[in-house]
Amino acid sequence: MMNPAEILSATIHHGQEKVKRPMLEKAVLGFIGGALISMGYLLYIRVISSVVDELGSLASFIGAAVFPIGLIVILMGGGELITSNMTAVTASFFAKKVKFSDLLKNWLVITFFNLLGAFFVAFFFAHVVGLTASGVYREELIVIADSKIDATWLQTLVSGVGCNWFVGL
Image (cartoon, rainbow, N blue to C red; front, side, top):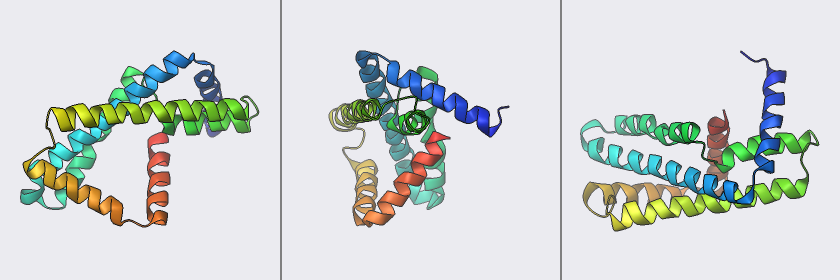
């Protein structure tokens, strides 16, 4: 078990390693990370849509239990998410181990390819394959989208920061 100082040191080292990766590796791992987290969310939608009428709000709990499968697969497969890059590379920057330009470049590349991977899954699995195209799956997806649209800017920001803190753990 590491103490807090050792955790910080390991995080700083990890951030340095992330920045040193070749661009193609960052792109591929970013795409994979975005695709896998999107698959986790697609699984969440499929699961809660199937049981929401019978289980009510318990369906959200069950969905929250299956969503991390995407995160687990990313950890096992080595994909990159912007959340871990914001944690590790920022720690490296504040420790003066990485330049600000490298931090920004890393964030932009990983964010772009995370989005590309997520859009790929959304288009091909949800749209082309039709996993959310009809029935209860489509209805639940619309309910989720409406709730996201109805949130205030501050609610969205605080929710996103909290989620990223949790994922970064």
